[in-house]
Image (cartoon, rainbow, N blue to C red; front, side, top):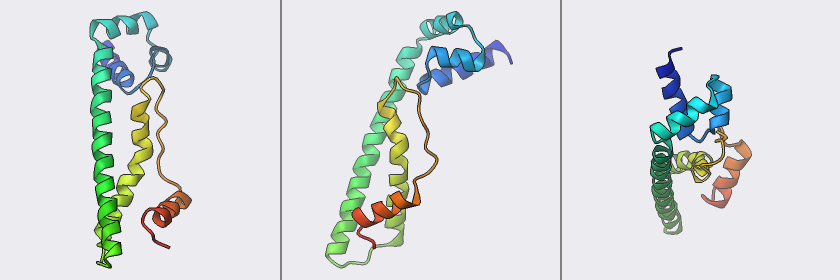
Length: 132
């Protein structure tokens, strides 16, 4: 693999939260080279900007989910039929929250969760959506 491809891959890994040591081990690049690239191409500033953008997205998504939950709760109280699309949208948004939590920890390696357990989804349906 060319050095430029390794550079791009190393930069992406760093921006996603990997440490120089982790990148060095995974890609087989000397730490000295990685520290040079990090300083020369201002990876810390790029990482900070990327994390800010993700944090802003997380906050916006949380606000949207809260509004959607309030709308569903209000409709339920007023005995107005709630569309299946609203439930579906809310459940899909809630599935993203474990992954969004990683945006709060820029110094740790992200642990990606593939899916929520069926028990956890049933708990959300009971406690938040009021579905038995």
